[in-house]
Image (tube, rainbow, N blue to C red; front, side, top):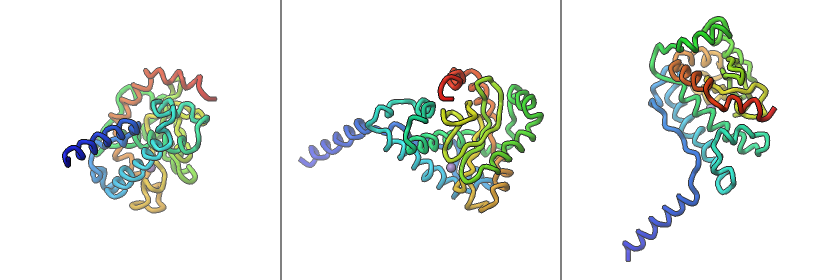
Length: 236
Ligand code: MN3
């Protein structure tokens, strides 16, 4: 009898998980929370990933589970975000933006842009150092919370942009649209424990842990991605 109860309990859990499946999940990091020290401290990483990012995932799931959006890919949700409630706008952006952010950071020192990306950066900004300055300026001048971006535009060009809150360049309510290949989080939760009000110091430090290998791959993929054409026809 006890065994039967246990089996029933497990079946109920399995059915429950199947019927109410979580469509989005928190991505695992490929490095430890302490790996980006001293540039981003371990406590900030832990809170940022396991609490902030997890909350965006949970709140997004709560908003879409049981609705037709449940089975729509995250990117497709963002492409028509102007028709969605703010809870979906904030949490789909929060999930996507952080997932990209973790992917372009690394504890490995001295990564370099690919020749293809280096050439494009030099053509658009003159030098990699000029690009860093332009991105940091966009990040430093973002009032309140938001993100700075390097994006590939539908024309295949590289531009720097910035968005408030958890908006991003894929969303149809955003002026500068494109596929982002660099994302820098300038919400205070990204740096306050270590840098307090000194956002500029955080922005200076973060280039030490940028993964130019990952960014170069994202650049090559973005140029080939059919999504780029979609961005010219959806939204504005
Ligand atoms: Mn954040």
